[in-house]
Image (cartoon, rainbow, N blue to C red; front, top):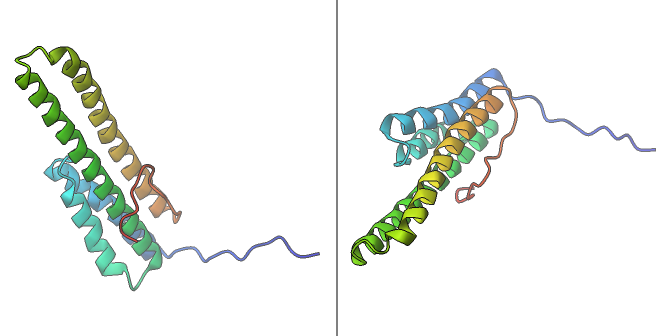
Length: 148
């Protein structure tokens, strides 16, 4: 009978956990300081940690890469929301306000979606930072894995 015990990977060091958590928290802090809709600062913040630790700490590099992908995804989702908003505003203007019957409910849904994106971004960034601090792996939801 074979043993069902699996070989466990060693727990990340305190330094690795601090670097991994800082990738999430630095991305969050920089994005908040520069307006989360822009999102570029969050990508840059996590990117700095990734480039500093990619060779030294696989754990920190994994978390930094995940933070980059998440902030990049949020940037793309926000850009799509802005583009849809511009189209809705253009439709309202082009129809001399008559299109407001259709664009107003769509605009309200768009505002609700943008609010949901903002809340998800904030909550998931905090969860990821605390998971990294505890030495756990974390995968952001609804994230496009563009950087691997």
